[in-house]
Length: 507
Image 1 (cartoon, rainbow, N blue to C red):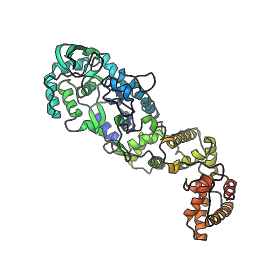
Image 2: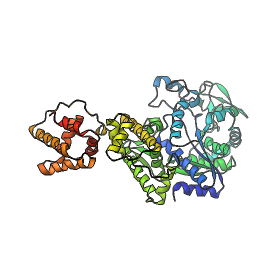
Image 3: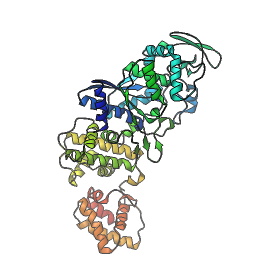
Image 4: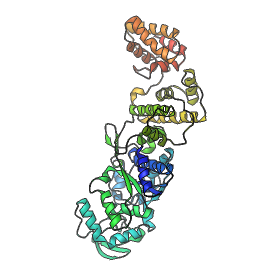
């Protein structure tokens, strides 16, 4: 049974209605690693609903959190003075919107493309509107209990004057301080400059520290399930303290949960927005089909890390997805893979098996043909396409657009090429000139199909005792001006025979 269905069955044992929560602090570009969390939650929502339950998906934008430092992608001069301010209150790196919305807006647009439509919770507004008032008062009324839980579970010693609130200083920064007076909902504290500042906690002047904020959100939102990263699941971590806080102070049940592993950027490590080591979700969807992104996350168990290679590895991932799709329609998949494929779909499954459009061939055609009409005509002429309905054309357009994005930013140079309008100026030796004549003669008579063209290079190898790779090298050189390129049989078949033979004849 797929992991989403296992979780769904456990949830339905405790009730038919569920609130599935996900969220992030929008401190920087929201990346594929972060998308794993909400896609995991979305899969469980779908599984609960498929089994007759009723589940809602929430996405909490933790924009009441402060800017903690000047991250590598920020302007030091602009943001040095803004460290400590809530993300919802500071300007964006570009444009007129706020910092949090600058990063949240493209992420939500990316979520729509992968078929995820959560109810968005603006945490900053929740504080401003007094949504945390009851939880905050309960915690403050039981400050010593809260202190004992945090110290006992986390193993950390809190300051003697600890108060369960992150204060808002008179300049707007979030800070710590020494409480001098408390009369709900007001708290007065002394800041680092010795000044006394009063916060109205019911109106969100300041906020709860994270280990108290998280269980309070569970209470306020009625969360019954949440997926979160392994950093929160360590012994004595924020989930362990959150369980104690919600049960012993807030009087609610602990949500069910699942822990997910990181997505690593191949050769570089785990993705993190704050370090700049990340591919933003919207950028991912400019270079990979949305159903493939979902499938990469649906297929493995959440507690297994994913190594993502945005280079050639991306082509391999799309190829694997396409093979999985064909096996799905041929009923060759085992149960887990079948369900992973179903949960990867953006729209309803087609009744008919989609025609395969080989992705690597599309990479070649996107670079060598002028637009999708030429690509479709070439696929038909080379025998890779028969009929193409409106859904098929839409899919092809999505994929060629993704390939363009991939070629622009992440494709290795080895797969990029430009067909040279004029014969490249190359000084071939006598042996190569002889091979060029052999190639020209062969290309003039061979059947003009990908397989026959491919096989002809090995026929030349047998006839001349010259390695086929030498003929490949020459052909790439005269067409592309470089010694390597796309799969040659298909590539040459997409061009007119006369163009190829005339090009060979210029040397």
